[in-house]
Image 1 (tube, helix red, strand yellow):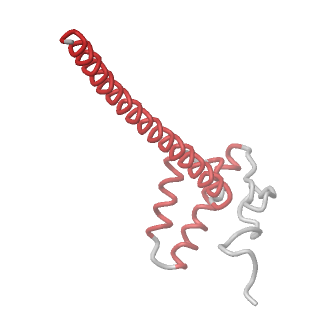
Image 2 (cartoon, one colour; image 1 turned 180 degrees about the vertical axis):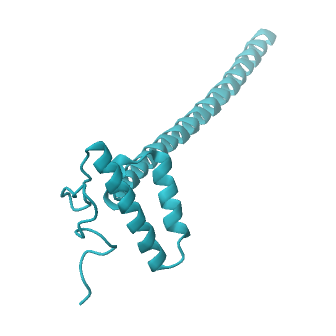
Image 3 (cartoon, one colour; image 1 turned 30 degrees about the vertical axis):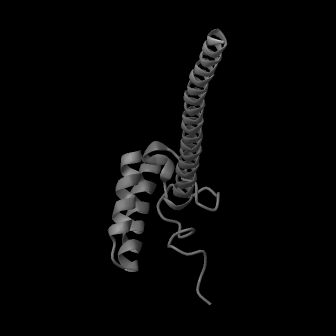
Length: 139
């Protein structure tokens, strides 16, 4: 009888120890799953950030005259000048100065500047086509 009680007690103790071990393993699995979910979210954020950077770069190619002739540092400086301009007239003046600089650079390098509408610009000064900030006259 004592042996049977002792065996039962050992079985119960082993079961409890196994349950404790099982609980710890389950907690470890949950922690690992949470870490993997966080990593997945971070990867999605990173991919989204890269897409955003690509989209902004593409927009710059469309909106910064002579983009392809500029360094990253020059593009950043141009963006900052445009952001710092307080009036439309000041922005137009900055654009005009920038256009003259890019046309001179293109002529010097024998390059052709691509307009935002996809057409080639003249590299012999401003042609008037594509200059300004709008896509046409006011009605």
